[in-house]
Amino acid sequence: MQLAVMNVKLRSNWQLVIIHLLFWLVYVLYQAVSYNWENTDSLDFVLPPQVLVVSIPVTIIAAYLNLYVLLPLFYYRRQYIRYAFAILLLLLLSGLSMRYLTHTYILPWEKLHNPVRYAQENKHFWIPVRILRMALQTYPVIAFTTLLQLMYRAFHQEKDLRELEKEKYSAEIAFLKAQINPHFFFNTLNSLYALTLKGSDLASKVVLHLSQLMRYMIYDAGADKVLLKHDIDHIGNYIKIEQMRFADRLDLSFNYSGDIEHKMIAPLLLLPLVENAFKHGIEEDAGWVTIHLKVTGNRLFLKVENSYPKNIKTSGNGLGLRNVKRRLELIYPGQYQLQLNRTEESFEADLKINL
Image (cartoon, rainbow, N blue to C red; front, side, top):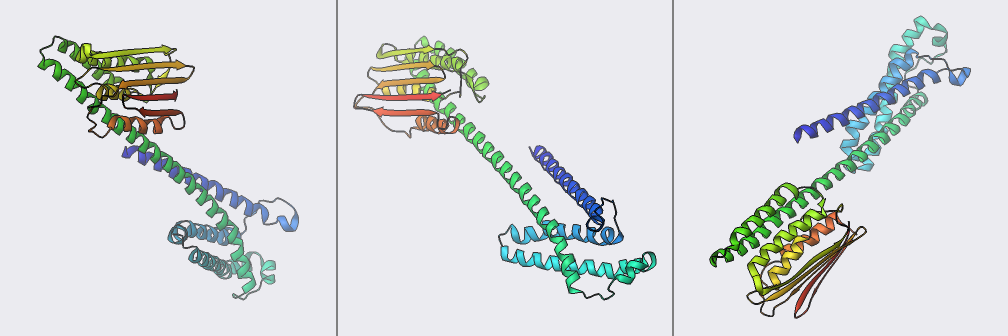
């Protein structure tokens, strides 16, 4: 995991380096082409010492001081007024630096190699207009590199946010699935325990169906989606266990219809509704459970009804139903309808999902 994160960061850094190199290449080409452009209307490629030794280095240094000192120190901390004053100071220092380098190194060079231009130059250091002009030449580059940096940063922040939300989503789904397994097996083991107390021969069949359920949960239910047919088979195994447990005290109707062969669904999503019907619909007395599942096009309709005995114990926190609601919100947002209706004699769960 850490190695993968490191690779992503290195790849992002290399992308930023390439963007910067391309920008500075374009900037140098522009400086070289535009030097004689205004006066001669020609696109000569010229890099005089004043551009190569003064303008380009000072502009690059100023741009990176802004990107990696001023932005983190002021702008990212939302100290915008301080940032504005810092930019003004940076521009002034850039103009002064350019004037200093020009006066110290370029004028002596022109005296030897370009005496005509040297004769036309003002030999004084302090020329406010020229310092201001040099400072303003740096501003467009600082503004453009700042815009690039902010766009790049915003893009990666959005990307990181999406990755974080994806990881949070996966973690929550995994947590909800982990809640299903112990909740389900707790009830199933209670059924098996009741049969063993009675010395019933059905206990071995319950163990067989339970092993099939465990195989499904361990090897298949870890996927994001499974075949609807397999999930229905899983529900069927659970119902067989409950039929063995309650025997003649259970009035059961379970049927499904429609094209289910190639439909996919989130695993273990329907089971808690069925499990809830058996858990609360049948106590010591007889009870009934009706389960109807239908697929029409890409729509799944599930209706689970059960008797609601008057002496039913309502202890518990309703983990299964809350789990179903939360998983529906995460996996099928805006694509499902779940209605829970209770009367004095029955309880009904009506679910519709766009598969």
